[in-house]
Amino acid sequence: MFFSSDHKLFNSNGIALHHTTSRNPKANGQSERINTALKTTILSLTDHKIDFDLAVAVHKSFYNSTKHSSHGFTPDIVHFGRNLSLIFDTITAPIESPLLTEEGYTNTLLSSLQVLQQQIRANLEKQQDKQQARLNSNTTQRAPKVGDVVYTLSGNQFRPKFDGPFEVIKKPNKHTCIIRELDNPQAPELKVNTHKLKISCRRLDYLKTNGPNQSDVQTTHQGPVLRPRIL
Image (cartoon, rainbow, N blue to C red):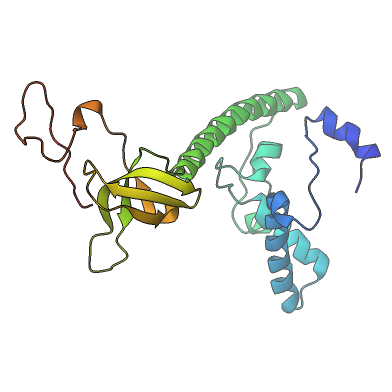
């Protein structure tokens, strides 16, 4: 590890140095992903009797000329403002570039890099929003609590996926719940593991009833009756 001589370099370039635990490669996923790609390319090239130094140069050329999936630009454009010349460019006809002075080239390069930085930042923010939305869609539900309306997994492939609705009336521990058919105090109580329960949406006050024997007729003072149903 290097700290003393390069610590000033990190601070001057706005690089944050974070320590990771040993034997935990997933904490440094970006470097590990590059290392995997580097090993694959070098091994495949050395198998064809290509010199190691040349294999590293070829991989560097491929990597720096490949668009990043997050911001959509190549590392060459991000660092130098243009795509670097490759060996394949010698096959095609040369492109005449306009004559620029040193000052004009510097000003053009700095302005294009500034616009590019803003575009990259906007693209990264969009990708972060997509990733956050994907993570939110895969989040697990919270633990059921007393009073929640839940549905249970049927456990039978020939039946609907969920049965219910039920109401959680007791919770002996964090892994089990005592449930009962919704709005039916005479129904038997069931002991179910929490991973077999799916929490329903919050019940509105006008959907709650005082018992199963109420009239099914809707009036101006009584809303629709929530009946047992199957998802």
